[in-house]
Amino acid sequence: MASISWCQVKKSMKTRSFTVLIYKEDDMYVAECPEVGTVDQGETIEQAITNLKEATRLYLEEFPLPETSPRYVTSIEVSYA
Image (cartoon, rainbow, N blue to C red; front, side, top):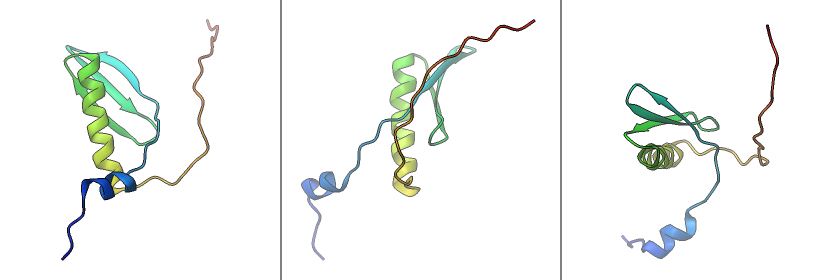
């Protein structure tokens, strides 16, 4: 059986950008990727993002997403009573 080199693995890897929502819940930061549905947490924002990246990578290795057009994020202001 032939072994696979790191270069071959790296060539087959894909890179995509995703949206991350971060909020504080009790004493932890929660990071959520709405496009994939992954969520993770950490004691700091940076740790939550690092943990989310790993969780998302592992998820996508098992359940690849179809290619989609770019998504744009903006905010709106709403007045209400």
